[in-house]
Length: 211
Image (cartoon, rainbow, N blue to C red; front, side):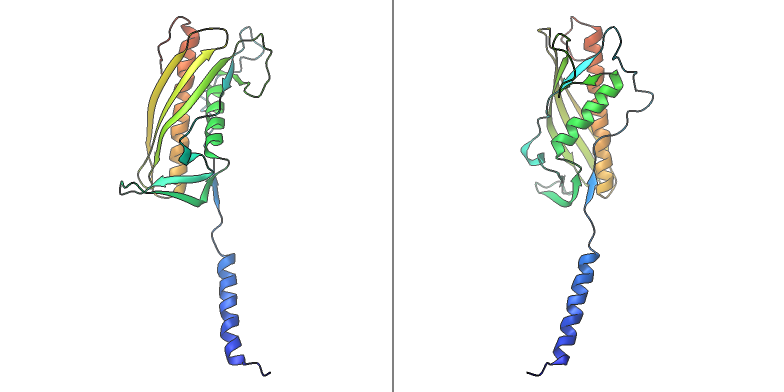
């Protein structure tokens, strides 16, 4: 059978163009919520001292739509539609990123050790921190707004301190800017949680939240 070279040439060109387009496709972008504690806010470790500080940060409770590695953003027109961005992801699932960032932010500001996975004797008291993300709205070229509530309870005490606070940051356009805004919001939340825990440490009789 005779091959029709006139037909094969365009097909080969199309196949080559498709292959080149596939090679040139933009790779996935990965982001983290963790950020270094500013030097002015960092505290020396309390481990080895007379009163070491241990915290136990439970997994963060988040709305179901955020329990995924993909970034979830709202439309800038204020509508009800959200976008789940397959090519823009957190380095781990969002709730794990949030827990790790809050843990390092609180620990670094208080010189504490997070013993959630072990690392202390059962006779040593620990401050248990339970965090719930109540709201998280990210708008490309707009704002990142979040609402957190958290409870503080020392393992050898009956009192519980309950806190709630809102945080927000204006952001520029693009997912890099949105991720940076989310990182700043998370850092601000960690700072507030550290302040509330420090207040509970210095005023053992109080159950009021101080941030």
